[in-house]
Length: 188
Image 1 (cartoon, rainbow, N blue to C red):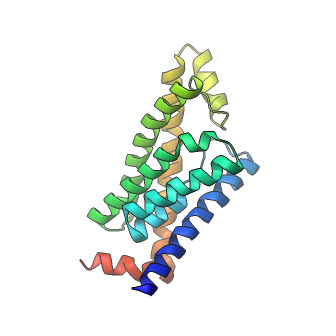
Image 2: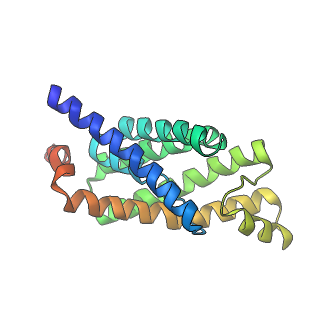
């Protein structure tokens, strides 16, 4: 029991560090159309399940709200939802490339809908992120700000979340450390 708990705590900690590291790498490199801020959430969800994924997501956003921007606190619900969706899909369909792509698409749609609602309520659709210029361009071409925000978030999230899920799939399949409980879950 103690080893199981230590393993779980370690995976949660690693998930938060991965989310934090990739968030800053993408921001510092100024890479448009990527967030990569939920790869650790997805990893925890794949390895430990949806509840742990949600915990990693919420804790990540709380930390980012202190270190980067308080807006991250408002989007904690999305990162929690990412963990829940990824964990449920992988629990039901096992970890395969197809289930990972499916999880990425499902997460992208859910994150885009909720993210658009949150950004529309809090900031009128813009949040100061790397996709704001794309949202502004769509808006200037005649698309209302909410629709532009949704379209930009959907396109960005599709790329970002599918890539994140595929990278996590590769990590889980190639690094034995992450297979400890994944293998047990696959045998159920």
